[in-house]
Length: 85
Image (cartoon, rainbow, N blue to C red):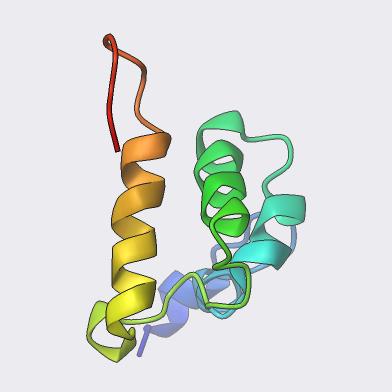
């Protein structure tokens, strides 16, 4: 899926393929020092999606999983006023 040059680039000892193969729950710990990434993963975990893989294709998600991703996206947005769900 990725060429050798891409796989040779590592972040904290992991290649992009390794990161995309992590679950959301594993990603929370791995990206603990990167608030912008960590916070979004924490929200996904809080809505019950800790088991999905970070690189999982959207077409493989169930309807309920897709809805929870949309919910997590809204919940992780900066508050701009009152929001009703």
